[in-house]
Length: 527
Image (cartoon, rainbow, N blue to C red; front, side):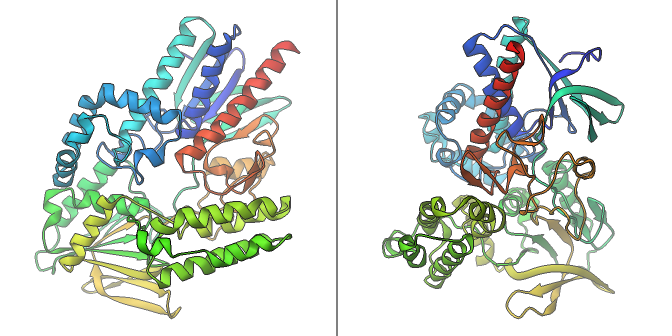
């Protein structure tokens, strides 16, 4: 870590040090090493949390025993996959000790079940702890930084603070944060997705003697919040008829949370019941039904192959009808995701640029929400709870909680009848796993930094309302680049981009940005 040199502007300033920023740096430094760039590059990296180069999913805030939502072979593309496997084989003894210390009964079962495959280096089919990948990223980037720093061609300055504003005067950006003000020639905005919008309370955590609400399960960390939940349950009024835990949402975070709640020994008592509330009432799928899959065809999407002119709405409607048909025969996403995705992918090149943009902004994510898959270990927990009458999935949209004499009761909009319903059971613990907020949404929980960028005209949301408009150089304005989930709703390298939380996509887009930065640096040197 270098001390700040404020006498001259930085060449680059990264705001946010998660997966996208980290891979951008990895690509950029690898290229500089390969071509033996002789000029000094001075970089500032600003991160609001204490841990750099992991982001929330792969860092301490998610804990050491939360597993990937997909198998490792489906998580990482080549050549990153092979590099990571090599690193795992060299470091797995230490990593597994950390995992065991962090977990409970389910973690012990996982370790025992996969002991032989791990000893043989057969990692591809495993759903390993996400934390392993975060440690790998830190190791890999630090080696590159040390190599360049030792040659005197790189200086990296780290700042742990939250940026609230970026202003521009002529060709220089000024980055404003608490007790920090620096300048940079280029800024890379890699702050992840828009935050989850809060429910019931503006605070992250609300607690009284009858109700605990947690709006951000990874803030300050998953482990701390799991302990908070455990303590709350232990202190419930003895006259209470058990404990009802409501998870709002049915996405990856919801599954991970339920898994970890049941990885804690005292949470497996029979008087704790679990409920999911989600709009579609569907869980991610895990197992391929090869018999039904063999007879399934996306007929509506295939019909569009004969059309010369297509609209984004036509493709979306056809995909919806084909997914509806799969649901009717109880064929899940694990069986249909590749079939539907490939059929859609063959049609997208027939859209003109405007229609392709419309698909990226309005339809891609909607189709994706119905194609979620997860590891069987997560769904096994739900199956076990169901068999004991301790899990229920409510199909509806959250509205509010009503406080009565006996406690708190859920109000939701039923997805079948579109009417308001008050659930008959009292809830004690509520965890918010709803998706991200949107620009201009009713909840208005967009980060201050983004609000200020938009107000100054340095950035503007695109029609997706979850991403920023960028040009071919991934700029929302000159020399202000965007990387990561805020690229949703754009056409990049002739491809429609609507979901940038998959690791393979992040690596691809980070590589594109690294080339753009490298080319601009080279142009500056020779101009």
